[in-house]
Image (cartoon, rainbow, N blue to C red; front, side, top):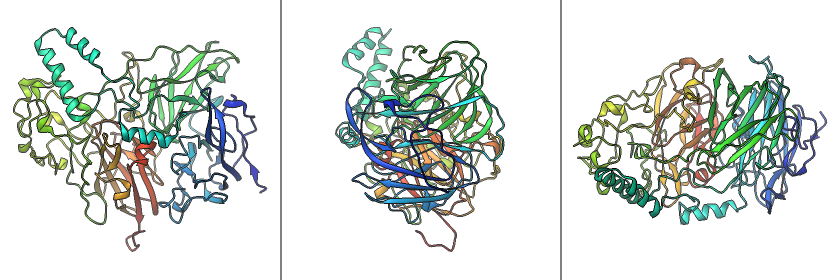
Amino acid sequence: MKPRLIVAVAFGLGALAGGIALATPAVAGTYDLVIEEKTVNITGRDRTATVINGQIPGPVLRLKEGEDVTIRVTNRLDDMTSIHWHGLILPSEQDGVPGVSNGFQGIHPGETYTYNFPIVQAGTYWFHSHSATQEQTGMYAPIIIEPAKREPFRYDREYIVMLSDWTDEDPMEIVRNLKMDPGYYNYRKRTLVDLIGELTNARNSEERGAIWADRLAWGKMRMDPTDIADVTGYTFLINGQSPDKNFTALFKPGERIRLRFINGSAQSYFDVRIPGLKMTVVQADGNNVQPVPVDEFRIATAETYDVIVQPKEDQPYSILAESIDRAGFARATLATHEGQVGTIPPHRPRPVLTMADMGMSFGPTGLERGTKESETDRPGHVAPMDMDHGSMPGMARGGMDHSSMPGMSGSNMQGMDHSNMPGMNGSNMQGMDHSNMQGMAPNSAAPSPSGGMDHAAVGHGGMAMPDPLVNDTGAPPGAKVLSYRDLKAAASPYDAREPDRTIEIRLTGNMERYFWSINGRKFSEADPIVLKYGERVRFRFINETMMPHAMHLHGMWMLPQVGNGDRNPMKHVINVTPGAILDVDIPADAEGGWAFHCHLLYHMETGMMRKVVVERQSAELQ
């Protein structure tokens, strides 16, 4: 087949930002991608971006299930680059992660590297750089794979809705700022004026005491409950267009419109809604699910959701993707003709973290970690920070007095002695073995509402621990917000059998010094997690931080244990909410070296990443 140079491809019927010309979508075959720098103007100021074939996002790759593809990538940068085919099942050597994928060390400046792999799936995916911070500067693009068989749903037309976040800052400057001050981008911190207002509005001395205790507790932890996202000040884009450019998707009243949502941002979660329209979710992370009508859904960094809408009125409808810290919208408009503009509502109130989001799982669980050599935490990796629980107001070790903490009922929480709880060493909170704690079912098909641990059963009383599968978007009463529990695979090659073993995956780090880790070790300090080919492994995610983490495993599917048996969804990204515990099964059916990391770019870059090696029992560790 004659090679084709991929030029700009239409995202549905709309135009890309910056006046880039459109072309007919390419079909599967041979492709050429060119990576280079280009001056762009997204916010009114000229900045240097990393582009694919001259555009942001890069061109749509339209592939076909069952075909082989050849993709030649030419690096015209001064630095190394790479492309990872996010969510695609392919050989390790084609996965595109330097130093992790088998034999792949990146694409040198001036070099053309050729990827060759079969297309064994269908659905909505994307590709992006896996080198340094190039993804933040524009190096990402959609992948649409046409199925070999007819899909179990119908639609009249489709649009890609690729969400992303743009900053005029140098990404490495962002990292330096965060290391200097983890709250550098938290522009809405609680102030002295806020405190005075809260105390003035308190109804009695008990409420004022609770307010003081709450402020002192957060101060002792050197944290801020308003720090919902590490980085704010982004301009949020849809298909490369800022909100004022208003990407427009045309429709005729009564048509069924498929919207392929891709969160290609570096660091942002979005709450998505289309006021006036119900959305029916038909795919999650590229895989068909039983249709779920919803009003809203939260899309974590790197997730994809396909929805179908059917606007019946001749009017514009706003597609709204609001960042979870309520700092801004990415927006587009469904319209019957060009020039129509949908309305943008006021921002919903920003969320504020509570002590419940801090979780109760500080330290090893006693489960294995999957490394060939035994592993211990490195100093300074404490969750969510270097906390001395004994010095926190009302948090004395061995005799935890919750009555002085806001929202705690002293009547059922007094004198809580952690040292008497099975599997928990109350003296330092280390060695905590959740598998021995009453209410924790290590191999249950579905975690309890608290994410695996029934905190009421261990005496936490009035402390409402987070449900890892519930997304509080601030939706009005009665609105249906998508949960992982709603996702039932339309078909799955995997049964509901019990795992062969369970591995603890504690999400850890140090916010004050701004580094992130897995099981108390940064990527540079950690050994690979080794899986046996053909086994089924359960990763027990325990989020010891107060931030969500979008955990991505390359090369294999992850099956969150949400109570749907052999219809648990197949996902390539799992959102693990603050303070929560979530079990995820992994059929280890792909040999080789694979990246495993948080898809929040600055979390990955500062350490929240591991190499996973799947090997046959006779193979040597790679």
